[in-house]
Length: 212
Image (cartoon, rainbow, N blue to C red):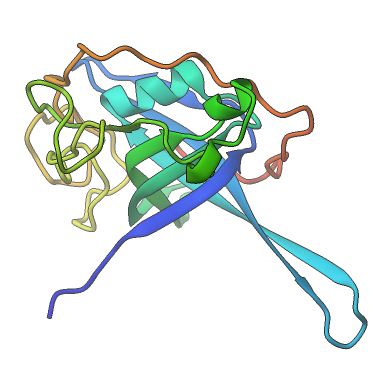
């Protein structure tokens, strides 16, 4: 039986997305989102809350959409998989980090701007965006999104050369490459989301010493 590596998150951005472009035309966008859970302590009756921060990586067109429309405080749905990469820091020490490579993204703030939380759908009825080169844009299996069939191109893989930024258009070597630039450009993007008045703040040291 094959293993499953799948992550689904709904959270709030702690800072604006950051994008790096490469000579081959590819791009990489990163940001962190917070997810919170709350519960009541059975012994004290006190209400408690715990927040986790998750580092998100998006490639090419999907990342460009995030860069254009998401801001600190934006609420977003991310679907993807875990990737671990390694690099050597300034002191010559090998370091590791685990990130979420996003394959689908859904912005959840638009309905609030239109006077509600999305009615019966609870605000989750916005289009989903992906990194696929499907012709025609929308398909029946993805409800208004781009399907990410390019898989591990330009992603993170555990094959020795992790953490390097490469220009390989069709490889799975763990480099940041050109994950396909034939993305459908023909859909109309939604209006930018308005961030909440008091967004969560990502820890200052969340991205310390990490190569982009």
